[in-house]
Image (tube, rainbow, N blue to C red):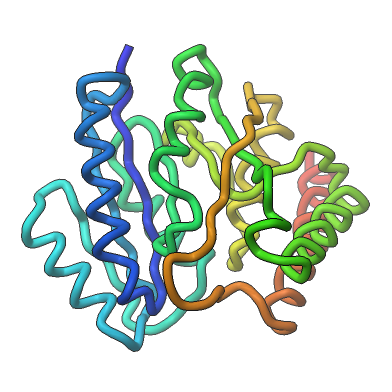
Length: 240
């Protein structure tokens, strides 16, 4: 069995990373065409970069018909970039990759056996976050997990790396606008009692530049999204 795959890659001021990351991604996917991959598209979403990221994406797309370039024009955040990519996905399965190189395309190979075995959704969790991103990012990640456990009852670790059937986007309503949307999706899939499986994946240091998800304002926004999702779940429960 082979699957068709839409790879969503979102980028904000990743001018130093986007070309090598896309080149490596395309090379890996081409190699998998003789294995588990039947066809693919690469959706590149520029989230209003102020550097040359958008121009480099356009150049990459002009040289490869499998690449679909999209741009927000102004920065709208990871949540909006992911949703834009979802809307443009056309293959049977969907996954996401950041343009900073922290999750390499080869990690997708670890998710594929689950869907080939019939899973609706396979979600990854990082195995060495502290060693790669340092104590500060590790504490923030653990804090978010604790917050999700208290408010949402989520016990399984999940880090926003996943592979799922695109048809699920028609039955799962996403409300988050921050990068928390990457966690809302598998959380809602599990609440709908879909076949969701968890596998460990590796995270790597950024190729270049700095993280766009740190900072008090963004951390607060994500914490607020967790509260909103809890309230939304209550609303959905009582409206039945």
